Image (tube, rainbow, N blue to C red; front, side, top):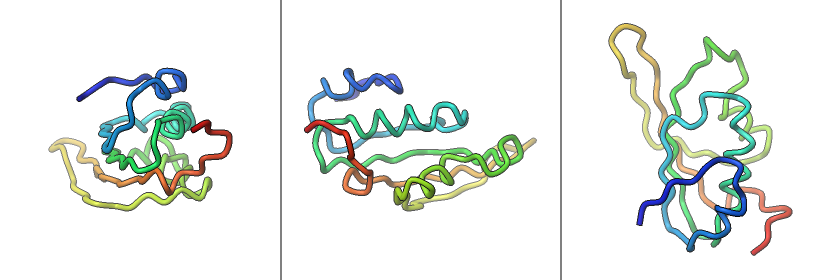
Length: 111
């Protein structure tokens, strides 16, 4: 079953049935979305899901303010699964990261 989910809507995230896999693409390009994304992932039911996040590196726009750095600051382990250069005119590196529920701090989360 595929369902959309808005960042920051913890109630909607908690109302979903437990899932095995979360797929997200181009979701971490705006620094103000990092914590709502993380909070939404923390609100998902179950403790065994895996998220695959496709993140385009935009360091020229953001400097060091990247989702990857925010996860590192929060002690959240992102595992790089795949990387590629995409685009012809202004190529960008796109990284596919794996994030497991057990690697996300779950403080304040209701089970």
